[in-house]
Length: 456
Image 1: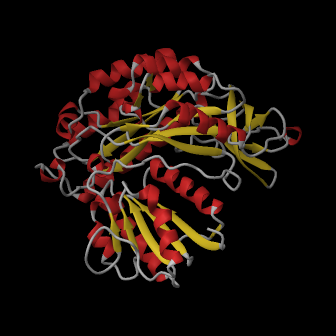
Image 2: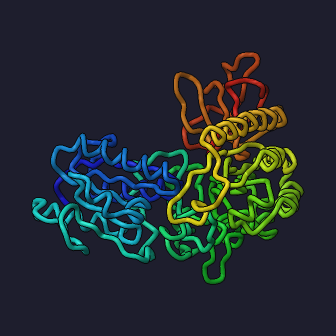
Image 3: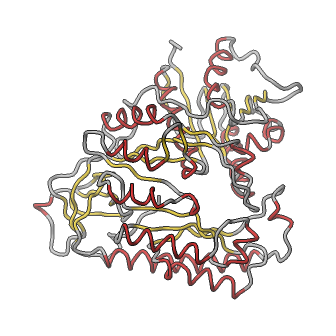
């Protein structure tokens, strides 16, 4: 595409969605596009939507309506899981031009280019009827790994790289396996090449992500095998793993993380509950004892790692005693932070029909209790790591101060010039920090708002 144009990109949901938007951004920039803030106006507006919960789907509709209110001609397209789940609903909104399912996401820009070349007379479509064109297959398994055409205009601190898509689990609260299709993994050689390109472009950290990352399987390569290959690459950069299902964290994977200085000493587990009965109703194939064994194995191999967990509060049938067991579990497992969520009914899932539905008030109260626990865990871990030397990824340098994150998933802040460090400095780097670089960092104080554990 030779003529310059403007585009705006919006994204909701998981890191896989964000990685896809990053890839689309690079492709649009390589075709001459200039980015404008979402929701536009722009000649092309793309929303990568989410439908993991009813609330997320509603937020996707709201974001799409914002884009439509700012529309001044051009094309508004919506893709992602909400588009896969309810294409007709989104296509019926006046002003939407294209609804593109997960299967067709990799071809979205080619379709738009053809549409633009025809002066927007008609969007090619697979459906019949009025309203926006719908491109959506029932099996979202086409090309699910978008390539980055250029890295020149990308941020330099952290890059996301999707190496796996799809899920074979059937948890009673989740619709993602329907929307993302069967499990597929990126070729190891392609992953290695992509990581090398990202490191050469100046990214200090590459986060490997997927819909169910622990299910990564390629010919002759597990996720642990892939980590070992990445650990052998030259240069100074690090690898971080995004969220993992507990039953996919094998002894081999733990060993691969522990033995490589390149892999961040940080694991995030989608635990969801600490009560055996609730876990069974969720369709989770483990119990508290399994989690204890797993976390003990992690702590044995990685004594000072950041270890976080997702927890769902207010699942049907979760009585007060069940919730107390969930609230007690993080201390038992030695967790360092939590990501708590209130349960949200998802139509079409078994969980939506379970008895014992809890009032919204109770769900919110329980999430608030877990957030208070999260704050205590974060503060305790920060205090424990005081006086340690850590490797910090510098994210920003502004007004004489840097902000970054340690491999253990601690947020750091301190003076950008160590020579000017005042007494009581929160973090001292070895040399003047530059965004995207990795620096050794010495924590001198922990119990302070300037040093807090970060979210992923």
